[in-house]
Length: 287
Ligand code: 13P
Image 1 (cartoon, protein in one colour):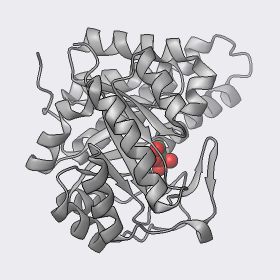
Image 2: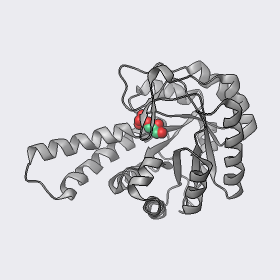
Image 3: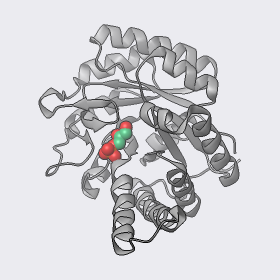
Image 4: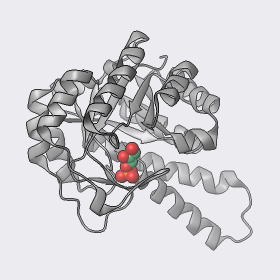
């Protein structure tokens, strides 16, 4: 199947009460592991590509890899820009073949975030590309984005509802207490914020910082209206643990296939478990 917008599966996720995972691409092995997991679980999925990953892999490689994976798998797959920082970057990705974009205007004043996000939505929707917007400030570190705990800010539910009404984004990321990267202890999730916003907006809520969140918290968040969950760090941790162990046990190992292959397996297992937890297994609607 060609790449699809997130609207191919997010409305169903919200109405049926499951979530679709965004799994970030870091290299070829991540792409292969994520799509294999999707095939085994028959799950829709979202490839997330951050600006840092695009710089590392090259924009046309990112698009080519995602397209081939989607076409060969027959699954509904979206290629989504993660935390797009400008209108120009969003347009560059759409022109290159992305089927979905996030415009992260959360660091702008509220009215400016609405104005800029609306501009992105108008341009993206005109060519069938879905849009995720963000409100509040998600803590932690992800590539170029670094937000100290004291600067993380829970989204105001009334503002989030107005943001959605005005922008008509297809997925709404709101800061509810999760963070990018690894947690020290357990995240304190503001379920009340998820519930209040979700009841008033048609779009599913997006939970960033999905790594390391306890299973029960994930299930509760989904039951209240989270329909998209982002995961990257857990895949990085699982794959680098395998590589570290193999290279330390076998100092003569030089063939990258012999350590990247097992690392790929580790990523696949993490992704499969997330798909089951999110309830997206067997939800792939084939063309
Ligand atoms: P983690 O760092 O928790 O995996 O979150 C990834 C993410 O939210 C990407 O936007």
